[in-house]
Amino acid sequence: MKYTLKQLRDSFNYVENYLKKQNIDEIELTADWYWNIKTTEKFNFSDVPATDNDMITVGSLLDDIETLDKFINDEVDIPCNLSRLASILEYLNYYIIEKNEF
Image 1 (tube, helix red, strand yellow):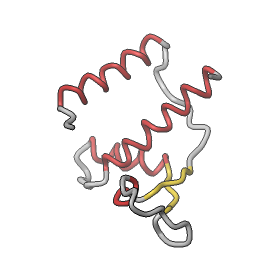
Image 2 (spheres, one colour):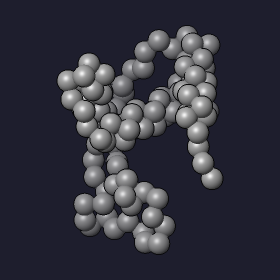
Image 3 (cartoon, one colour):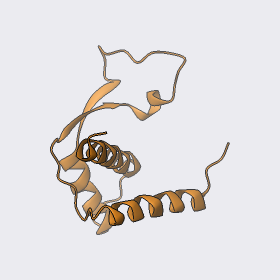
Image 4 (cartoon, one colour):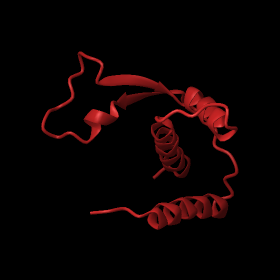
């Protein structure tokens, strides 16, 4: 299975159009901290991640946003920016569900 750049672009366009239709111009952060399973373990189903080591960590949305802002402004180039963006998208999903009370 492959996921093309066009599919990725179309997915982001879909999210942007959905937010526009819902008149969502900004997202209120009602949480900062979140649980994070290391990317190297997230897709490894041969073992269950242990909770007594560093496989499960704590992330910060505020830190993710600040780092991505620096990246966008060409101040820093960090390979883990996709993980930071993924966390923000995951929060966006939580925000929409919470707002619409599904």
